[in-house]
Length: 224
Figure 1 (cartoon, rainbow, N blue to C red):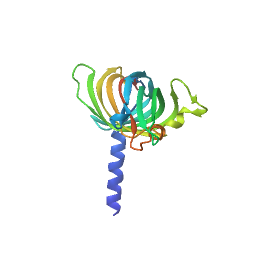
Figure 2 (figure 1 turned 135 degrees about the horizontal axis):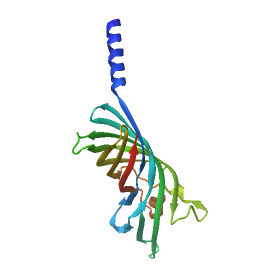
Figure 3 (figure 1 turned 60 degrees about the horizontal axis):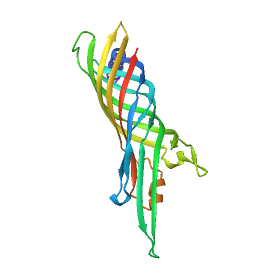
C-alpha cells in the first residue's frame, strides 16, 4: 500500500511538473443573433444581427504537448433585434393583436470549459488550434431598445439569470519571443438554454415559446 501511494505521488508530481499554463487577454467582437422555438402563428422574426463586444482573460492548461483544457472569464454582450405579431380571437368574437419589436442586449460573464487541440508547426512559429466545448454564463445586465427600465419594470427581469451554450472554433497562433504568443480565430456560439424569463411566453400566452442566443465571434488576443 505504501509503495502504491508513493508511486501515485510520483506520477502526480511528474504530471504537475510537465503541465504548462498559458494565460492571456482576449478581445472578441461577436456577430450576435437570436433564434426562436415557437409556432408560426406568432410571426417571430430576426430583424437583424448586431455587433456585440466580448473581452476577457483566458487560460490554457496543457496536459500534453498538443492538448489543453481552456477556460477563463469573459464579459460578452449578446442579442439582436427581434419582432413578433400575433392576432388572437377572443371569446366575444373580437380579435386582439399583440405585436412588438425589441432590440435585445444581454450582458454575461462567461466561464468557458473547452478542449483545445493544437497542430505541430505548419510554418515557422505558426500553429493551428481547434476548440470544442461549452460555457456557463451568468447575466450581469440587460437592455431592451437601449433602455434598462420600461413601464416601471427593469428589462433585465425579462431574461433568465443563467445561460449555457456550446462552442466550436479554430484559429492560428503565432510565437513571438520565448513566451509571447498572438492568436486569432473564429468561434461559433450556440445557446442551449432558454433566455426568456417567461416574458414572451406570458405575453403571448404560450409556455412553449423559448428564445435562445446565437453568435459568431472573432477572437484576437495575446498569451504569456
